[in-house]
Image (cartoon, helix red, strand yellow):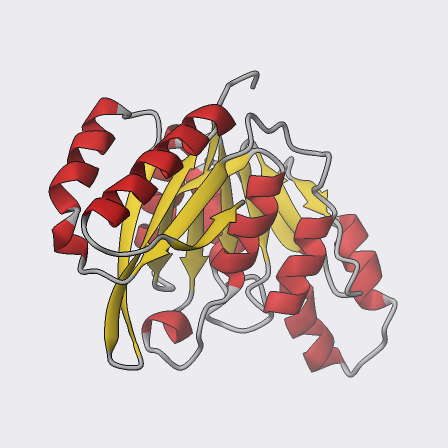
Length: 251
């Protein structure tokens, strides 16, 4: 995977996210860590616990992106169907992984509880494991799809074990600047810059602070020299519009 830009898709699985009962924070963590590893999130999708939706989405993402990361749906309850859906997406049998079984059985509980816990040992046949430093059952991966827990602290623990295991590309860098002016005042010039430099992403984010309207401009790309040049140009555009460039950041 020796690419200048390595891209990933993220699939957040769970009715609780779509209903608003649970707020997803996993994408923020994934984006930060993966970008540091040279992997850019190109698409994120939140989907329900419905078999055909999960299967179709996983197949599409796997064929589209270099890596796919899923969170949610690998617990011990009836609606935790992610493992079975991943197996179906890759036309694999669903089997109990002996390492996960051994981990779960090392903590004795009453038979009915153990039966439920062992549901977390199911993985597609041939899948590899993602270690879980939090102490619970492992996640798993098959081909380019990495399946992790939805609980943020567990997902973060699993993800940490993948550092240096994934092949990244160029790191996506950023430059940002804020001006107290309406984004419409420089929209035309920003559009022209974006057309001239399709290799970068230029974002415009309006805000209101203490009754004053402003806009933060963010430039993202892999070439630091180009980003620095565009930052200088955008600062000049802000000044021409009658405002002062503020809060300049390099990321």
